[in-house]
Image 1: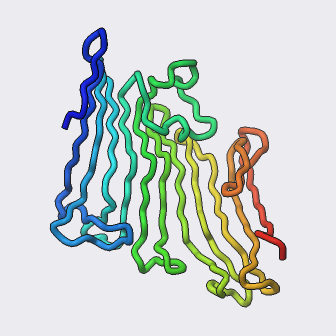
Image 2: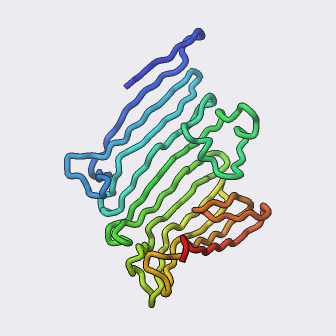
Image 3: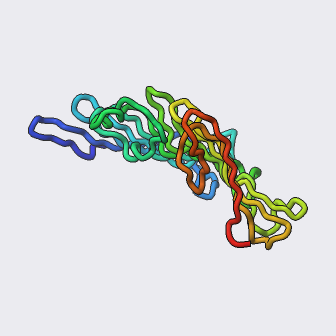
Length: 252
C-alpha cells in the first residue's frame, strides 16, 4: 500500500509504502509474549515499510511477530527493526548510535558523507530456550543487538541472560555459598573480536541471604570505556587484557 508520494520543484522525490505478508504454519508458528503457541488459524506476520527516493535510493524496514519453528517447538525467536539500506541520502533510524567503538568506515570518515553508508542493520534478534532450560523460573534468553553487516564485515553485540539465577533464597547453594551467572556477552566489530565477558552475584556463608558480592570478568582487546554492566579495559590499544572486578553490592 502506497502511503504517500513526495514531490518538489524538480519533480518526483520519494515514494513511501507499507505492507505485510504471512507465513504458513508449516514454516512458522506464532506465539504470545508468554511463549505459548497461538492456535490456528493464527499465522506469523511480517510487516515492512519502504522509502524509495528518486535515483533508485531505498531503505526497507522489517519487523515480525514472535514465532517458533515446527519440529523445534519451545525455541522462540523475535526479530525487531531490521533495515536494508541502499540509499545515499539517508540512513536507518538508530544506526549511528548503534555503531560499535572504533568502528571505521569511509562513509563516516568524511564530514557530511554518513548517509552514503549501505548495508544491513538489525536492532534486536532475541532467542528464548524451551521451558526445560529454565533458570529461577525464567526461560534462558539470548539476544543479538545492533547487528551490522556491510562491506567492512560483521559487527554485533551478543548477550545471554538468566543462565544461573540467584534470588537470595538459598537457590544454587553450594555449602553455604550462593552464586548466579546473570549475563555472558560477546562483542564483535567489523569481523574483529572486541570483548568477551560475564557477570553475576556471589553470596557468602557469613552474610545474610539478601547480601551478595557483584562480580564481572572480561577479556578485552584495545581501549574501551569502563561501564557498570561491561567492565572493559582502559589500557593501550592493540593489546589483549583480562579484567576482573569483585565488590559488595551494598554495605555488609
